[in-house]
Image (tube, rainbow, N blue to C red; front, side, top):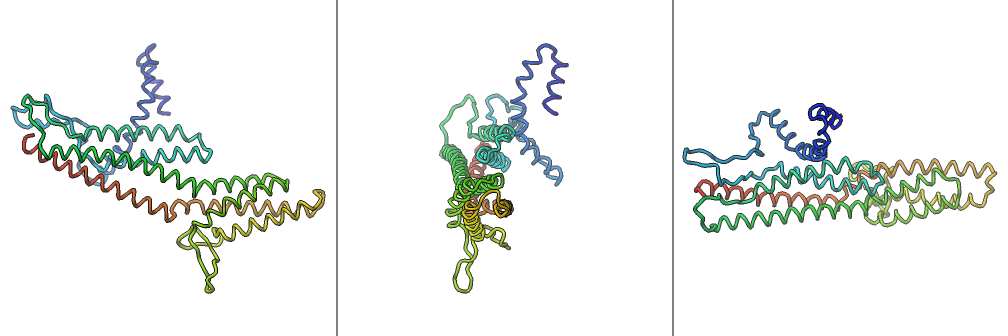
Length: 336
């Protein structure tokens, strides 16, 4: 409703020239989406009674009468809000890839608007935290601390870029190896449910076996008192038999044997129809089991380890930029 109301209002306000104003609507949507993190933080600050200034307003530090705003550098402190903007930008990028790979491209435009907004606002925040000398008439050489601050800033920017690339690569690689095979398996079960041809069903079951084999190697094992593997389950806490991939694999093998038997029975035989109904019911149940297991694949050991590394890098970058902020304050105190 918002974009529609915007167009109606500018039509009434600007008459024939409303089309030129309407061209700004995409940029306005992107900007508003990007500001949502900052606005949300402001709302929570108000709820909890924290008093913060709006840091996106330029501050020139006019304190004494002889101070002049001309030549002042516009610098913003680096805050956790910028990290949140970067995080949601990366998260949106991954969501776009997941939407494409899972055959849901309809969500891409909506996610893309928000992702562009988060990255744009994060870029503006980072660009305004650069170390800048005041453009006074008296020029001087940069001190050692100033040079160090610039170096830290550049290294931090490289670290943020590396963080985005690393996070995107790990997310896509993890989705391709852990989640996408489950999506394919669900698709094959859909094909089995919608088919009554033994050859077609056999092809789907063989494809499911091929997808299950590499996944079984990655799942944690549970053994009995005789050291026999009885379960491979992605659920860490309170696992159930419904998400036991060994049981799922055995059911698929059993279904394949049933299909081979049905292929020798005439299709007008009642046993053939009974067997097809049984395969259909089992496929529907196994499809639900795969859907139950899918969320737990996102929190596999490899994914949790990658997330820990990602968080550690974020903390390291924030620490470096916080140190730079302290150096900036010290320089301002000395009248730099």
